[in-house]
Length: 116
Image: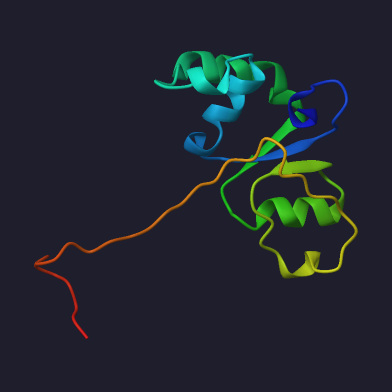
């Protein structure tokens, strides 16, 4: 995984949300995918330590795209929601990618729900 190679990847960006990074950190640390759960959270955080100087963390989903476009980073893991990136020359790899899903729900009968 080039992203986790501290010597060769340049400055990388990471979304500042551990739930989206812990599995990747453990895999990079040598944990087989079929042995990830339950997550060894202390080991995952320790796996980040050698990369601290080469990683910029951000909380905005669009931030990695802005940093790529400006040349401040060389790669990122995560979404690239930035209109200025359309048509830009860059490579995307799904090797080792993870599928995530999020949803907000309102339970039936919730006291403050709106109905249509």
